[in-house]
Length: 247
Image (cartoon, rainbow, N blue to C red; front, side, top):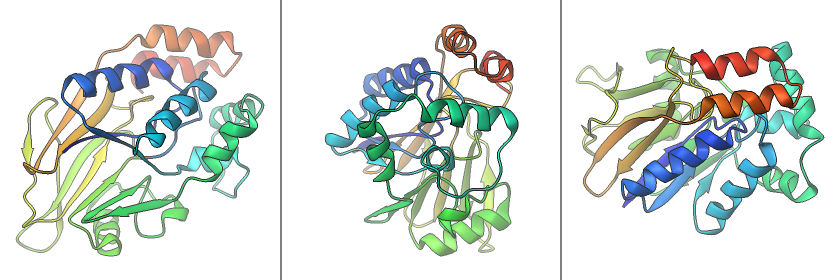
């Protein structure tokens, strides 16, 4: 089964649509959406509706910290621009869209896979996995062969090396990586809706679990259109700039 993994969509309909189209062309048979469906961007309702359609067909969907913030749940303080987008988003969602977010779990476990937005170690704390210490905490808590997550907005793959500690690996887009079950893996799939590595192209990953391979992708999309919508909505200018510069 080929499983497409998308995280941090952040109300970016153009990026989401481009990633879904690309994944389907690659033969994706199922989808997982790893949190932060909303926030930052100008199409929260349309993004939720599209992901809800996939959920009805069996997609995995988990809650992210921006989703929790829109629901009014306690989280750490956000930047001024992020909070402005959260406040704006709250006024744009229907009761049905809010209910969809409200029903999302923090973590989903299926067979030897764990799906979570941030860390499997206290997922409600929204810890960032920025190095081997955080990766090891998540991997120990998950007790799974594969952990798929987002939150960091960059693509990284960790694996347990011979010394028993996580080793980071920066994937090359489009190059399949063997992910044999004799090791344990933690994949941060990057942000579809707001990449932050200087490249504006959207991120997602495709896991072929039957063949034990994983491929990370970058997908070009119309980020100018998404940025234009942000400006037209009256959201902070920095949010549009970030899409244009991949920062």
